[in-house]
Structures are given as C-alpha cells and as structure tokens.
Image 1 (tube, helix red, strand yellow):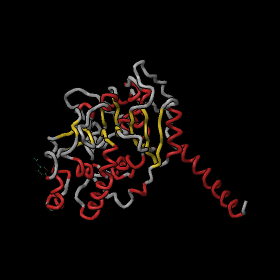
Image 2 (cartoon, helix red, strand yellow):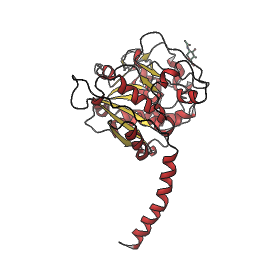
Image 3 (tube, rainbow, N blue to C red):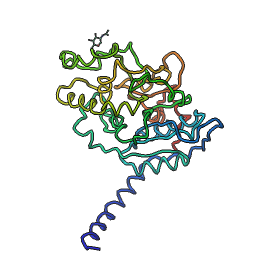
Image 4 (cartoon, rainbow, N blue to C red):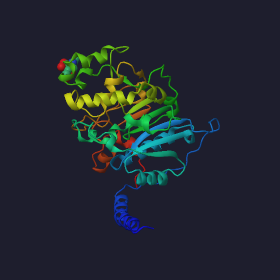
Length: 325
Ligand SMILES: *[C@@H]1O[C@H](CO)[C@@H](O)[C@H](O)[C@H]1NC(C)=O
C-alpha cells in the first residue's frame, strides 16, 4: 500500500473511533419492543410505507410513534418504515436493537441540501434542517415507493394505520386533515399579502385555501415526482429568503404549494396542538370527535414534561408507548 494511504487510514482511525464512541454514549437507550405478528388475512409483502425522521433529541418520540403504529396494526409485518436521519449509522443501530423484526431503511439526509434555504422562525426547533427533510422524501426513497405516509416524531397512533393508508386521494398529490376555521391570513406576512404576484398563487386553486398540519400527510409520490413538487417548494423557500413572506419553518411552503388542493382527511388522524402553543407549551385538551392519532405539536413535548415532573393529563397516554429505559 502507498505510505500516504496508510497515513490517511491511520488518521481516520485516530479521529473516527473516539468520535463514534462519544457519540453513541449520549444516545438514549430503549427497551426491546415485543415482536408483532401479522394476522391470517395479511399480505405477505410489505404494502404500507411510513416515513419519519430520526434524530437524537426526538428519538424517544420516534420510538414511541413506531411502537404505537405496530401495537394497533392488524398487519404490523406488512409495514415498511423509511427513516431520514443525519447520523444514520448510530440511529440505525438503535432502531434495530429496539425493534429486532422491523422492516426499515435509514436514509442519510444531507443537511447541506437545505443550507441557505432555512430562514429563522418563531421557535428555534422549527429551524432544524431535519424539519425540512419531508420535502425530499420523493428524492430519497426508491421509485418503487409510490405512496407514503409521513409522520412527525411527536405523535402516537391509537388506531390501525392501514385505515389511513387506504384513503382515496381522488387524484390529489397530498392528503391531510384541513382546518378551514384557522385564520389562514396569519400564516403569511404583509409582504406576502401586499404583493399580487405572490397572492395569485392562491387564486388559481380548486377552492379556498385552508390550513393543514404537515405532521401527518399521505403523499402520492408518483404524482409528486411527475409534477416536480420539490422544485415548487424550493422556489418558495428562495422567495422567503429574499422577501420574508412568513414566520414559521417548513410549514408555509407546503401551504403555498398545496393549500386549496389538498385531499381532506378525517380530523381523527391528526388531533394536533397537544404540545400547547409555540411559545409557552401549555396543556391542551383534545378537540371533540373521534381520535386515531394524537399529536404533541407545539412547544411542549410529553417526554420532556414527564422528565421534569410537569406532565399534562394527556401525556400519560403518550407514556404508555414510551420504551425509554
Ligand atoms: C386574521 O389574521 C390577520 C393577520 O394576523 C388579522 O389582520 C385578521 O384580522 C385576522 N382575521 C380574523 C377573522 O381573525
């Protein structure tokens, strides 16, 4: 071997080993989840695809979310998980040891793809590059995956995900619960509303645009790829950098591209806001109506509130899916 290569190898080993072991040591450790088996009526092949992000600070939430999906599924072995992560090697190991039988792939999400597109928002956690990973699902996942359910890491399901999977998108690219009573105007700044070349985007829609939460989405990835939707989202993020047309993180570009053309999913699939508002994180109650998914969107996260002995009443429900050791 050429000496320069040996030197290179030596330096890599010297640098890499301590970094990796320090990195792994501060990762949370989880109990192993029980094995979940398919019922008799289930298909042999994985036919439900779910995407989530993984990172250290939300890992406890992601693990609880996966556990909740498996626990309520009639065909848990038919679910394939697609995780987007920056430190993908360590996180792959954690998922494997927690869910030994899980069908999953971890994709490396390169934060450089969003560098320069993020503008600071009202809550710093919203500026994390991984928050933007959902924009790149169609690019990262193989073309054989033509439909995906995207789930945030601060939620649990209490119903069979197969019901959400099988909804009819009626030709739409994206399905999500819509909230037409929310004040849509407030999601964008005056520099947006005062510029007709921006506001025209909403006039071309099927119907009045409504707010939807991007934490639970069913996406037709085939249509997304065909229609070049990532480029459309990128374009609005570039405009934001220049004109500051909104204050929140990755949500407004989704509203700009899809609102007014979304397939409305039943509200039971995203009982959101349980983390309270973006600033204080006060306790919230459920909205009236049936519940299939509880979502701690907002500032307060159940695992943090539980650890600091300031749990809200509904956090105990989340705790029944907590595998943290
Ligand atoms: C909606 O929000 C905008 C901007 O924040 C405000 O000016 C307007 O009065 C609000 N409309 C309603 C109906 O609350």
